[in-house]
Amino acid sequence: MFRPLFLAGALLLSPALLAENLPRYISDDIYIYLHNGPGNEYRILGSINAGTQVSFTGKTSGDFSEIVDHRGRDGWVRSDALSSDKSLKQKLEEAVKALEDNRAELAAVREEFKDADGTIRGLREQLAKADELVRTAITDKDNAEAARAQAESEMQSLKNNERFRLWQEGGLIAALGILVGVILVYLPRPQRRRSGRWMN
Image 1 (tube, rainbow, N blue to C red):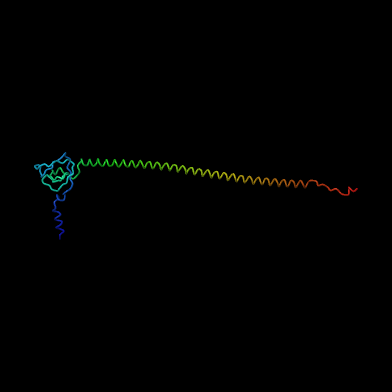
Image 2 (image 1 turned 120 degrees about the vertical axis):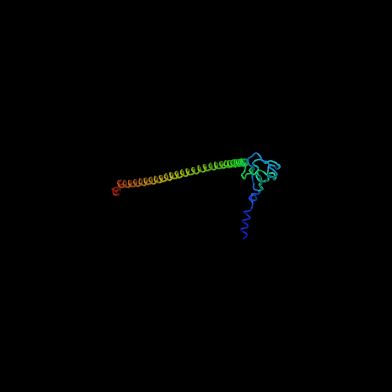
């Protein structure tokens, strides 16, 4: 029952009340006059430079709107001098500030990158040294294995030569033994003298 009444009351609210205290900006004129009433015939309270942020109270009368300026003064200015967008001057100032902030961030990033680049360079040098040590160790290992294999080969050759020499000496001794045996067989044996011959 109360819902339709609430909706009707919301629709009857003035758009000016809804816009109360919303920020507005003085458009890109050089300056405008602030009057103490809604018209040029009212007393001038002062001037407001272009691009200055003011607060719109929501009240309008004719071609004028009531505002509170940056100094806290209540007054009226031409409605066509108000804009909900920031002025070009303020946008330029914000753009310049953003550019300066970006330059500062870029300089910081470059400094960090310089430090990181030095760290990466140092790590690469350490990696190159470690790689060289690994290659040297592999080469030394290969050389050691080759020297070991050569020593084993030479040792085996010496063992084979020693066996062959022993076989040669054994064969020579056996041949000499056979030769001595043959010679002993064919040597004339001394004959015994008969004891009777002396007796005669």
